[in-house]
Image (cartoon, rainbow over all chains, first blue to last red; front, side, top):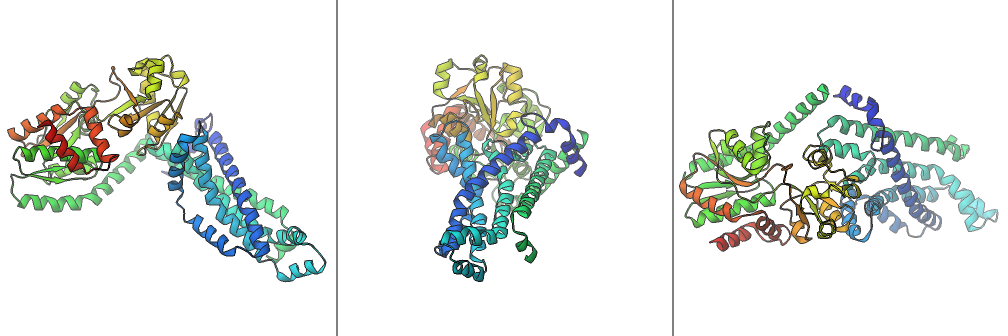
Amino acid sequence: MISSVFDWLSTPANWEGDRGIISQTLTHLEYSLIALVCAALIAVPMGLYIGHTGRGRVVAVSIAGGFRAIPSLGVLFIAVLLLLPRLRGELAFALPSLIVLVILAIPPILSGVYAGIAEVDPAARDAAKGMGMTGSQVLWQVEVPNALPLMFSGMRSAMLQIIATATIAAVVGLGGLGRFLIDGQATRDYDEMAGGALLVAALALLVDFVFGLVQRFVVSPGLTKTA
Amino acid sequence: MKRTSILAATLAAGLTLSACGGDSDPLDDSGEESGSSSSDTITIGSASFPENVLLMEIYAAALSDAGVDVETRGNIGQRETYIAGLDDGSIDMIPEYTGALTLYLNADAEATDPDGVYAELQDALPENLTVLEPSAAEDKDSIVVTAETASEYDLTAIGDLEPVAGELVLGGPPEFEERFTGVPGLNEVYGLEFSAFRPLAAGSNLTAQSLANGQIDVANIFSTDPSISENDFVVLDDPDALFVAQNIVPLVTTDAVNDEITTTLNGVSAELDTAILTELLAQVVVGGEAPEDVAREFVDSIG
């Protein structure tokens, strides 16, 4: 089993072309990054606001919890059936997949940002206010830098989930690494299925490693040492 | 390649075994029950999908009108399971499809036209099973376009797509792209070269939806799919019989079959065609009516 999966992975023909591993990996990354950016655009401002003001905590917690319970495949089908008659071409399949991934990524990002800000040492916040900083100066110069480790862990966990779940875009005929899982199952090519699954896991780990490197450069060394 | 096929065979065997293990108990129980009850009762089974349940109810309604004692036992799972049920006597009859049953019994079967498939089926049947006359009604792979596309390019048969296929997108389940009775066969038999193939999840109505909304131009849909009549799709003829004939036929044990059953069900099969079956199935699947009511109405209408 393992060696035949390895055969599939090491066959150059499987890597090349429009439908090859390289092209599908890039498509997969493209969907994943777009979804992460969209989710961040929604969740980061919400998290900053809630963490900074302390208002709406209950809303944040229920959104984060509720969204986590939404079944991705169900949302995908509902979104496709609702949007298919209203959209033209590729977008009719791409938008529903994106919605699913964004919904999936909002909870971890939101909780990371909100918790990061809320858990900044009150003494640091008080000191900043005592020095005469305005509300937004406190947020951007004290709270956000201090919250970065937790914000990053929220992003990383969101990205892991996105990469794993972006495989379902293949169900509605889009590309990405999910193609190997779906097509492999349909044609009973179990090497292709297992190979595709390994590639998804490898991509997730690789992207997480890259995010980890970025985190090292961005987060203040003072915070990393104490952590 | 060799390793691949061994692996696939091992996995397939494992799946088959586990499927049998999961489903065999209810059948064993029922076998004992029907064995102890009157032997004149005919037990009709069905596979686990709405159309087969409906056909079971149609057979049951027609036979009980003819004075035969009938029991129904619907939703018995896959072919492996219900063939075993016929063998052990827990059911006596089930609605079947000529092409699929022939390939199940003889993987080397070659015919694709209705008569050839039926002849091969009769050769392939084991001694304890027999089939009655096949109906003209078929539930098989078909190539479907919208009414607008059909009139725009003047399409009635699959071959008519040849000059325009390069501008059209074909959609269907993922395996349609690989297997011979799919994209390769369309190319080899009819010379079709589509601009793209969009794989869509099987078992959902995504393919029909995408065709209706123009994301794909040509679709692979089963010939009795209710979406065909709902959306006025046009089913293109398959004159070269690329897709294996799947005429509906009652599969009966030789122990249970008699003249009464044969005459009655041959009469029912003669009245059924694909359009009528599609319509009846739509009443069940789309209209939400009970299969036994739809079956009763149909049997009454043919008298």
